[in-house]
Image (cartoon, rainbow, N blue to C red; front, side, top):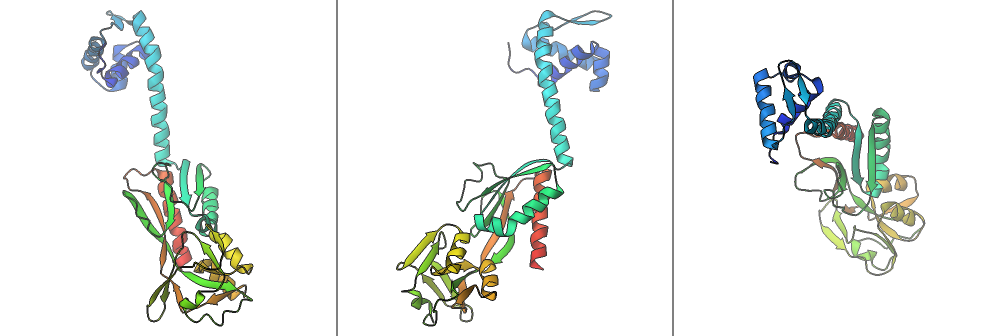
Length: 299
């Protein structure tokens, strides 16, 4: 049997077999009767099988044709179901969106946005992966990815959401009077958070840059910003904290701002999604919703 027969010819055969009439099948398929007859003959020739017995009044499946129709019709019904599902998805937001985000940014900025999005679109499911590791977003099948700093991924669109800086902070009761320059951080207890090592500092006025490489008196090393903030607040040492978390705590008197004229370089929080024309409706709506939420935050 040849393997290069036409699936469209096979669809024609299934239509004839289901309706029991060439005339009715040609009408449903929207093709001339002569074309339909020719395509059925071509299918039988390609398969080297007789599928139909024809006479002037009726069409009867051969035994082989009956077996073939029973097997093939199920396949075409499944293809029709898939086509209908995809068509519904194109016009009605539903299905799963796989999302990856850093732990702290996800908890601080994104969590409430995600929850409200799900309330608005009850037929959409979010599959969230909060991790500080740079996962293989293609291999993991992610639809949308949030990253801070160096977000470029080939064939993915990157949209800016928010800019942030890291600043130096100490416990509220800690004596910071002797820390007048970045060099004088040496000798003080330090809390590190990977991957923010070393501390890239820049003077607000002069633009002078200084990289501090903490080596001595490192009391704690973590890989999650929430733990870093809590450790500083608990009095364990000086830490390099994101401004969005640190500034409200400084204003409340919970921690101190060390070397306020120095801060980290701007880091940008980005949202990435695949660059393609036929972006699923659910993903496009999600992307637009997140962008709108962050536009509101900037105002």
